[in-house]
Length: 506
Ligand code: HEM
Image (cartoon, rainbow, N blue to C red; front, side, top):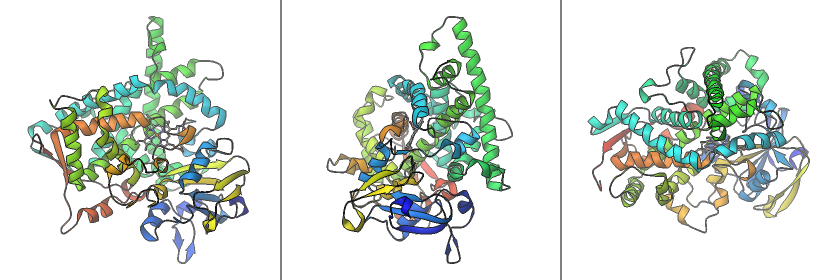
């Protein structure tokens, strides 16, 4: 309790990231074992949030690390900006670095600077323009392969799968120059599982994947075996792509061609492995970063697009506004250019509002790397601002769900209201869907360009609808199908939709 500055909160047997605790049910009779992976959502749906303080502690008495959960904008900002006091938790405890290798998302301090320096030159307007073009090309390929043009109505039984395949294609082509035809379905992978289904396992069990420490993979649990098999298949796919790219770069160099100057994500990763000096990547880092770009670069965008289409189907007035914007910016119904991106403010508001309601990443996890003062000013314990000392080694979790549903920041937090983002008085810092501070998302613009372009291409020609259950209201459907929690298929769906061909103004 002292380690978390005596901040009041929950006392249970296991800590928030204790895998022993997560393997047990959250409650055994009246015995509170651990808070569980869906704590934020459950709390929100049952008691409402701890809005008076915006901060609580979770202190385990049997196993785990004392942790504080923060859902106050001012306090989260301090944690995310204060890189001398708080950093990511040790990469040695991370399943991504155990299964695949050290990568930009998990590394700390100087090591992080090296990874960021290698990768960030690739995130430029050249890349976003390529994302835009590839989104149009892949969309057309999809329409043709799925034979949508011949139909007036298209039923998609599991929208989540269609969108994940789309976003995986985009990251594969834009980051890795790997362009399978839509009809190929990435079937070329080993071990009887194709790439999208392996990623599906990793996504469905993302919380396990993120929270399980390395040693636990030796335990005889089916769930961990499944994650292990999926990760091995992805691993062999990446290995083959890496050796192909190495050959290509070597041949281009021999032929005196110019890929050296070409900052693409994959080129930068591979080139760092042939460099010497302090910015060189080891093999472990090549694999780790290849994986994290494939994984973080597609699933988060897929979740956002899936939720957005479901919300636009549930709120037809909002869908109308998006269609009107598309007609206004593209009166001749031409394909959009990347230069048009800034004109689609309605679509961007819709994306932001979707990410507020269904944030693909729900926790921003940090560790106190030394005893550090934390000012709890925004609400303050007992209504007063106050400073507490967080002891070295304690964990801090920026609780994105708690922030995004806090009515002090977002009035009527459960409502889908894209227009709130036009209001200049809103506290925009309370939106942390892409993180904040030096470790904020490097792929933000990548995913916004991709999602915007996909929505324009789709809603220019199609209207999206969902089938409600018998006597079900749209809000009841939303609560039933879009729980947001990590259990089930990632808290969204499976979502079944119907696309109907649009006439102009329809
Ligand atoms: C809607 C889509 C996306 C969401 C919601 C999202 C969310 C986030 C969040 C919340 C963080 C900060 C994590 C933290 O502070 O602990 C982050 C970091 C990161 N994201 Fe994204 N992301 C998205 C798309 C992408 C894409 C498309 C890529 C790559 C192409 C990507 C790559 C990364 C990387 C590498 C980091 C670590 C950055 C660093 O630590 O320097 N993300 N993302």
